[in-house]
Amino acid sequence: MTGSTDMGSMATTTGHAAAEAPRETYLTNGYGWKSWFLTVDHKRIAILYLISVTFFFLIGGLFAVLMRLELATPRADVVDAETYNRLFTMHGVVMIFFFLVPSIPAVLGNFLVPIMIGARDLAFPKINLLSWYIYVVGGIFTLIVAVSGGVDTGWTFYTPYSSTYSNSQVALTAVGVFITGFSSILTGLNFIVTIHKMRAPGLTWFRLPLFIWAQYATALIMVLGTPVLATTIFLVALERIFRIGIFDPTIGGDPVLFQHLFWFYSHPAVYIMILPGMGVISEVISAFSKKRVFGYSFVAFSSLAIAILGFMVWGHHMFTTGQSVYASMVFSVLTMLVAVPSAVKVFNWAATLYKGSIELTTPMLYALAFMGLFTIGGLTGVFLGIMAVDRHLHDTYFVVAHFHYVMVGSMVMAFLCGVHFWWPKMFGRMYPEFLGRFAAIIVFVGFNLTFLPQFVVGFQGMPRRYHVYPEEFGVMNLLSSAGASILGAGYILPMFYLAWSLKWGKKVGPNPWEAKGLEWQIESPPITHNFHGPVRVTEEAYAYGEEPTHGHATNTHGQKEATSVR
Image (cartoon, rainbow, N blue to C red):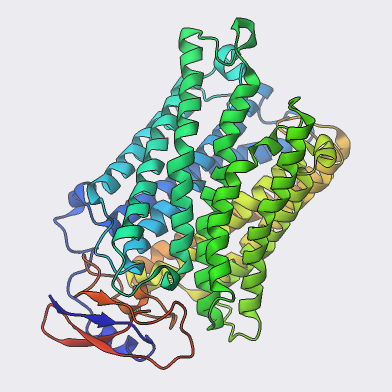
């Protein structure tokens, strides 16, 4: 391969690149389906992760359906108390550790990070494949737990119940989560090295897409925080098996120590889930408003600020544990402070939309929904970060609603947004736009109908994790269960039309959205090594409204193709 590629506008090159689509892509350049399980191509590994996380999303969703069926009425109509405890625990474990944490980094990050920085692959391709196998092994342990009775401790594994008294599959669950943690660590390490060492010439730090900044900040949390969780869960398993006095006060342990260790990871883990989604939203809002992201450097540094401050606020989960009042005051102030960089992103996205040429495509609808739901989730988090208010709201359904607005409402919206945005790039075919918009609206309506009533019953004092409740909460819970059925339909619909599009969807060229970015300058779907030649970057990120600067890269057939890079 010869030549270099200088990046300018893509709008003038779409038709030519579509006409000269390569004969082989990363999807077809192999030796049958078995080659997928030994591949080191980052794009194929991303597809493996996409299939895996979708499977676990369906499993976690099944547990949620059973819970909402039980909660539709005040009495125990479907399951008993012990079964309900196992349902909400397995729902939390599967959704958090096997869907929310890996979904955007492992799927979209794996697929896009090398392409966005002009690299042929990640720094450590074999370790990337290993991370997927580790993820699968951890998932198998969790599935074994599910079919052998489940675990009843809650996804937080609070001691000493989890380490001593529970009669469920705590040790096996701990092993599954412990193993899966190494998948996150390897993925984060791979991203950090790749972003530092493999950027194309001319792609300085302040020309990086904001998606890359978000992935970089997320990778730092993965590498620094996940070992703490792995060690904590390992200690729970040790105490459960060998009766070592670490967390059980009857044999000299301290149960509050577990909460310090657990939340030191698990609050930053919130940002492992949400930061990549913020990167997706930055890309989509810029693409469909045809404007530079307002305050690019502030948005970039806010990702790092969230990653750093996220390690300093774990104590706001522990206001009711008896920790020092002065420590609680410090954690409360820091909680208010960590809201600032999140607000910077939301305000800058809004400023980007201002006077933009806005297109209400499917990805854009999901992005706008993200902004609304994340704002609600963030503001209600401020309530929980205030000591006096948290005393009343702690362990009520207000916490459940807040958590789901941030994690499910925001993060899943961002995941669906990113999948729809880059689906034509990943597979070279377009989904039905009408069905995409319809599904986005259904998800938004269903989500709010599900979780807004939970704010109300939580403020009124309904405790979380109970399968029976007083009659006065019945109407709101029935609304919540009805909303969950709408939400479920909205989640399932994209699975059908996206699968349909793989065979019957309209074929598209490299840049169906007329967006900026290296990923939109190559074929759809990409070739195995992404680019036909070396890449050189000559533009800032999101250079909408500028005249293109053209270069040429010689492809494998000796033909000239005009391309552009930012």
